[in-house]
Every structure is written in C-alpha cells, then in structure tokens.
Length: 91
Image (cartoon, rainbow, N blue to C red; front, side, top):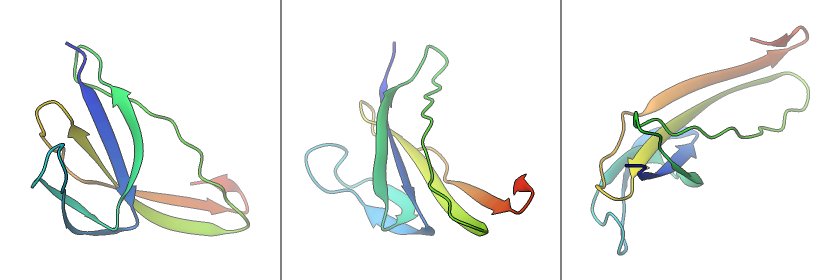
C-alpha cells in the first residue's frame, strides 16, 4: 500500500500541535514549520522528495525535517540536517 506522506521542514526544533481536520492534535518537533511536499511512500515506507535550496555566497544552515503519514497520522523522528557551502563547494 502506498501511503500519502507530508514532509515538513523548518529552521528550529520545537513543538507544534497540528489543528484542523487532518491529523488534529499530533505534535511535530519543528517550530514554525512549513509544509515542503506531499509524496507517496513506496512499498517499503520510503518517501523521497528532492528540493532546491538557493545559496548565495558562503552559507551554513541547519534545517529540521519530519514526515507525517497522513492516513495513520504517525510522525517520523525529527531529522536535523546541516548544510554548508564554502569556497570549495558543498560539505
């Protein structure tokens, strides 16, 4: 079964409770999150989404990512990803 997965991202870890008619009351570990995408997971439960991050000059950034199974309202562990670009390219 291919489940629909929402992928949220944001800059800071924190706490956010979802409101509304879909997954009302679940807690995300990202403060001031943004919905990045909705993707179907494969038979192994893996959803993949490639996205562009614009970079100008030297750049260091930490983002938080978290997935939500929209059908069961299960939430993944929060993933912290460090992104860095310097004069030599990606690190």
